[in-house]
Length: 196
Image 1 (cartoon, rainbow, N blue to C red):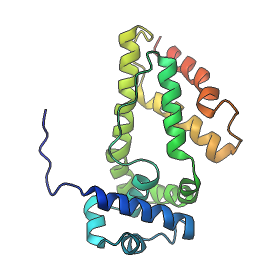
Image 2 (image 1 turned 60 degrees about the horizontal axis):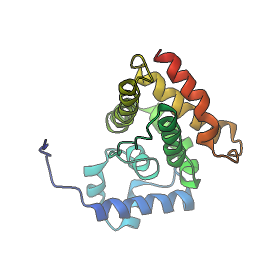
Image 3 (image 1 turned 180 degrees about the vertical axis):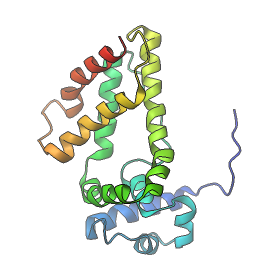
Image 4 (image 1 turned 90 degrees about the horizontal axis):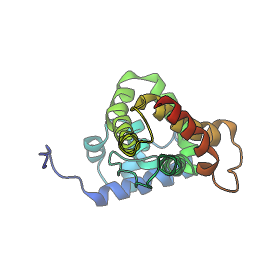
């Protein structure tokens, strides 16, 4: 099935230059001083090009350091438990690192301060994250591992919240076997209970 997209196609070179600029600026000056003007100058693009792609600094930074609006389907490991561990590893990869740590306090403050960026981020990113998780849950139902489809919002909160809390609130060292391996049994059991 083909979808008609309005406007010009996105130039991957610009997206890569902007992602590099955001990451460098976050490391050098932090979120507050990482302005759209500074990002445009560092990336060598006009500010208008940035606002055609992203409607706010929060949206731009989220896309650069967490994940953009294209989220690939997770690999099928053959079991819900394996898929849960894979999703947890993906979330850890997206939320770990110095740029995310530098961006999160300001990014979260911006998201709490205005309704429009929050709604737009939800449209761009949360919808895709939940579609990603829906695919995982659909496979588990098809394999007979879940009797019914649990509420995706609840599953999303459990997966995202557990990794976020570990990395950014508790600030514990990642277990030697990996964070996904440590969290997967409990999160898997909770999802099975919800889908029972």
